[in-house]
Length: 66
Image (cartoon, rainbow, N blue to C red):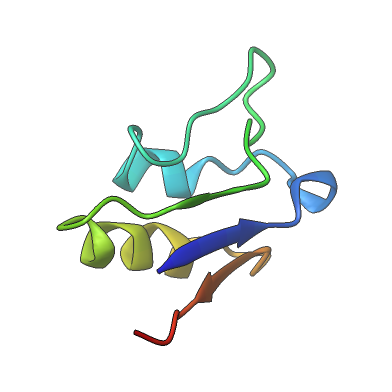
């Protein structure tokens, strides 16, 4: 599973980071600091919760075919 983030569209609500700070780090101004990442094994549910928490819906979940 991968997470893709439209970083330029982030408005700094930080709801993703409130749920999963280790997966969704913020920059010094409180905006998402990443454009995406590979979700570590075992943290899929947490990554999904963080993505769903974004009110702007700028975080996408990309399922990989195994």
